Image (cartoon, rainbow, N blue to C red; front, side):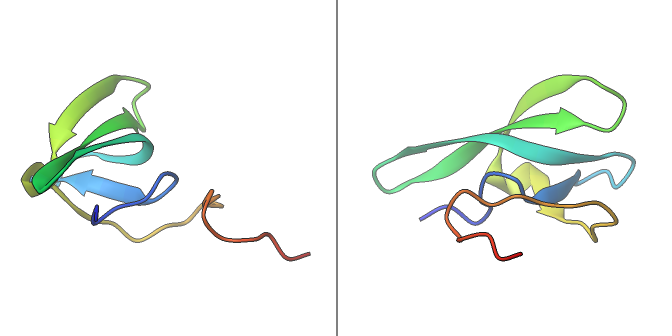
Length: 69
């Protein structure tokens, strides 16, 4: 099971940049990898150990939870 879900807001372990998880890659018992779109517009792939939770000041959509209005 992956720690972060698609749409979660994360920050890099350096703490200098935040972004949104776009894709989650999992394979068996191995740690997940995450494709992240950063606030500066760049995209990159990171191992789970390179990311941390970040506070969110924007709407986050999660594909696994039903939307309520």
